[in-house]
Amino acid sequence: MAVVHSHAHADRIVHDFSRNPMLVYWEMTQACGLACKHCRASAMPSAHPLELTTAESKSFLEQLLDFGEPLPHLILTGGDPLRRKDIYQLIDHARGLGLDVSITPAATPELTNRAITRLQEHGIQALGLSLDGSCAEKHDAIRNVPGTFDRTLEAARHAGRIGLPIQVNTLVSQETAEDLPAIYELLRTSFPVMRWSLFFLISVGRGKALNEVLPEEGERIMNWVLDLVPRAPFAVKTTEAPSYRRLAIDKMRAAGLAGPEMKKSAVYRGFQVRDGHGIVFVSHVGEIYPSGFLPLPCGSVRSGSLVDVYRNSGIFRALHSPEQFHGKCGECEYSHICGGSRARAFAHTGDALGSDPICPYQPGNAAPALV
Image (cartoon, helix red, strand yellow):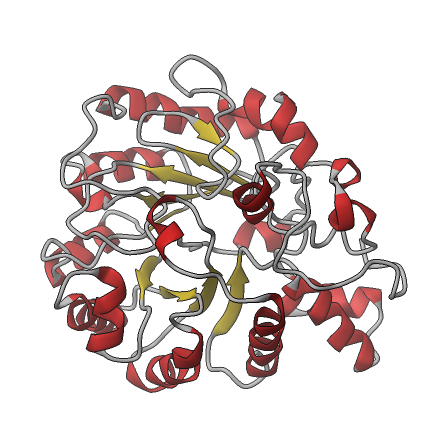
């Protein structure tokens, strides 16, 4: 569920997300020592026998250079990427290719202070940690393994001590919604945080056992996040909640900001990015998906080109084109900057181009949106 990345490329070069993704997520392995209730990967204790080999992994990483500038930011995820015996060798290879690399390890006994320091020594630029409760009882109930709360806090403190930037990812569901202010206070007062990302649950994998927030509650939480942005000591963003951008634009308009001023806002960064547009996901066996939460296989890095699939496959071309969306999302004046969660539309209807059910907005009620 992590989105850890630098905006260095975004600040220098204007992305055409139909050509170049901002983020490439690589599920290095399905192996993980946790059994989290909302796990997209339905992670297992052992690695899949057909996961990409070291040589195949290096060939895949080399494919990323074919995107050209701006190169995407690579996010190593899983399962638990620390379960790969060749993890440091593959980080070295990616960094040697000139790729920016972040990682989202699981809070298991393998996430030692030495492991975190070693990740930094090999060139990892940011660490993604998940925190889904303000205390051990609440967090560990989601993670299904006692001790993960304390281990996560120690990992965050150590990363802070050595100056490794941290993104904290927090699940937003009916089970966690009331605890979000307390989690914010914990992050604000406990250790340095670069970014807090609130991930709005998608009912895929084991996440089907939890409950998505209702549309009205989702809007309340998004407005609360927008109110936090100016005063939080770290960046705050949402994941799989692109209708947050509609609320942000409305708030900026109400403050008298025009189009060029909006684009300078930190809130504006990442507008237009959605499943399959600015994002691409490669599984542990090399399958290419629009995102980890949108399980539509479009090809394989073993037998084809990631660049060609991202730019030219039928599913990706449709996801690049909001005018092909159905229902409210297809009619909405905010479709290009928002576009709805394609993953949530698919999870609810089986149609990746359908409407995002978390959004209560009725199209046609606003001035034309900023494109």
